[in-house]
Image 1 (cartoon, rainbow, N blue to C red):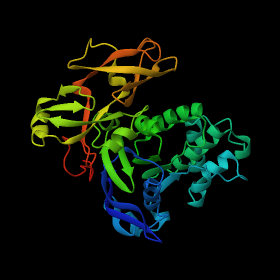
Image 2: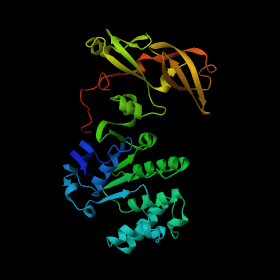
Image 3: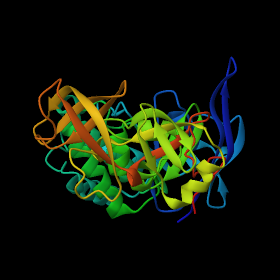
Image 4: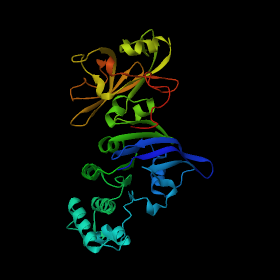
Length: 373
């Protein structure tokens, strides 16, 4: 097993369009790493550079001791699953699965063994004689997965493979991909703009925007301790609520006058910059109808604007001092619309960022995403 290493990778297209800038990352083997971010952030360009479909403008990509970006694509021992399935329409499922092995002139008995094994794993054994036109979207995606897996490569690449599926099939295929990875334990790079996919599939998230890394870490760590307002707003559905505030001594004052203390390690940070403009972030699930069970409750007076019952939970839109917040909780969370109510947040679960640059106040001055041990 070999680590996948990116060293100062940059990609600039004709016309001066920079897709990836100063990308440094070490992915320990074996890991399922997910490149996640909005459309146009450079994640697919990175995937294509790993595969050899694009060349870096500068920097290098390594797999262990081998430098990938100087190799021909066919020598990289990498398998890619595309968004569009990319199946051969005139071939049967069995022929699609075995095509890459036959091109490599693998012995027929070994080809048949691998195809049968993968077909059983992906529940395709009853479909081996069908052609892609006779399959559903989910079945086609499983064939595309199987065609990559049957090669037993050193790295798997997934380019938004579930984006063409409906919601139910996406949920099903997320589980399929994760179970396959847990069984195969091969370094995998998965690209998506869907933060739910990223959180459920990945061991390691690489959150990107405008060609740069904003944060690298486990899904739970990135969600619970985002390093900046971009990561905080990108991860989570509904997104994190934000309000303006300022520092006063060792306290935070939210617009409207609500004051609360911060954890002891943060007090000197705020005290060193009196009056500093802040962005206060609160996750929807951290807004509560009562103070019971909260370690450091902060009370806010809110007006109910809208309720969205979802069955298992209710999203409640609240207006607090001219700012709209969204709360997520049980059906009985709030009274009827337009009524005023008191809501509570735990001061220990509030996220505080510098307004000037969006960085978390207790984060390092520069993104700590250059590499992962």
